[in-house]
Image (cartoon, rainbow, N blue to C red; front, side, top):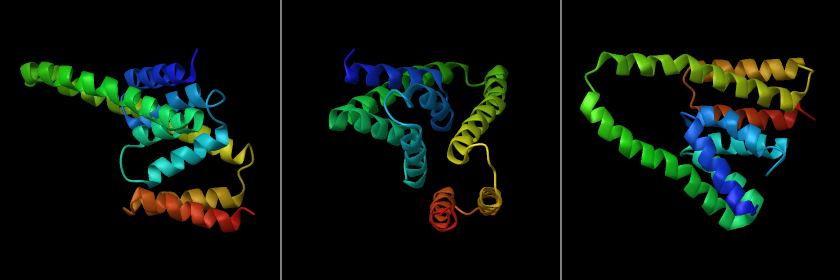
Length: 173
């Protein structure tokens, strides 16, 4: 199958089966690593997408598409990533406008929260293990702890990631 068709179907599937940019990262990891890019390239893409302003999912789509097939790949991946949420949003807004006062709607949304949190944690664990292997030394624990503290005291996430990358260049030699 042509690489552009493969990219289109992968990003169409990822964006149909996931509920957010962060949750889609795990599904994209399973689909893209080994097929379109290496594990290291994926980790770099996630870091870069998180650092830049805008949607992580769209930036990852463009990165993967461009890496696999240049500018046409980036454009096809972006289109496939935007298509499902756009169509679904139009349909959902029409339906929700009619049922917005129903109690089950808010309970449904509350039920999504723990599932998405587990998906995000799973991806974070996979990324951490792929970056450090099976050895968690004091540098990984210290940098992870410092990053968590910085994030908890409301340091913007892109700054936490940028600082982690800069510090990592010096402590991981």
